[in-house]
Image (cartoon, rainbow, N blue to C red; front, side, top):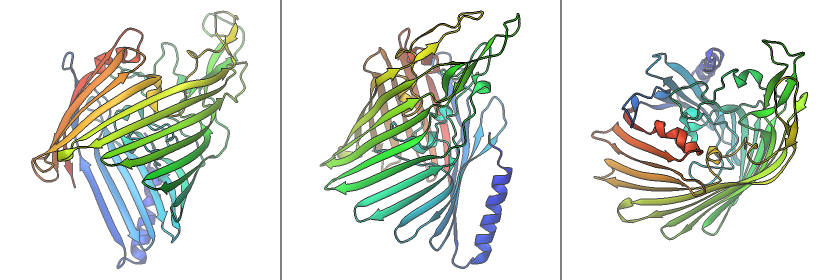
Length: 436
């Protein structure tokens, strides 16, 4: 986890200064939760030991047109018993008359659909929490943003001074898509990124009953990929003559989104056009120049008794792909060949582009007994390969501030599909949550 000693010290000094400067007109607010949970496999009821957020705390300080906000969590796993503090966000907000300005460690949210957003690339993903929704599966990064409001227009600019990649599970036997290798840890061979600033722009407006947006982002991939190989010397019995080198490619994204309301129906959609290249130098470089498209469309229907029915279609398509890649054949043999779509990995965009070129989510949510009980049913279907996921659960609140949550997920796949490796991850999850 991150080192928070200096960060927490700076936060304490800032809070003390703001509070002492004028405590009579300042406001301090907080909220949080304590939520132990357990996951067990459907196959044999064995425990799945993965980290989860056992406690969360949001702190805020407001004085005039200045806010300071902290979002923190305690990450815990039952098998280790070692709680780890995670400062997820800590940032200042200034509210001038024309908009807002933010600076600090923060999580941004771009896009219109729920969860699977091709346009939402400002923050990396935490793959330990990839089955959660919204910002709960994102990692906060140091950044500054500015929003300007003018009539029905909203303009936003974001600057990220330092790149940060996705957090992947490595050598996790309980995680079905854990990144692991037999001979080396790829994290030890990731090419250092040159000092450069990532940036993005977002423009939104309202026309009639619809909202429209256009976005642009320039930065590095959030997932690293194999960039090539470097020569180390003559081959020997214990040292390979080459080493694999991984890198975060240079990628730009141009996207658009919309939200429209028609009676009891809500329509959402967004798409992102990506251009990427391997701009690093290697002794044997996997040359790459590619463009691809990701998209998501969603329809929601609000029925009687507050039932919500939703469907979401997500997909991706490689538009162009050029380059040569090298393959190590032993000794000093390094043949090259044209890159194919099977070799290409999308390093930015929605994580579900890893699983399918086209898939569909369907879900239903209902509330009963004056919102005391919420029942959920959902499914994901791969429309090109024979794989799917079935899920459901309920949340019951017997008394105020207390919730009991139960959910189940079942993965089904055939040989050669990603969900085949997820079948053993099919599980039951039971949690207790106290909010304050």
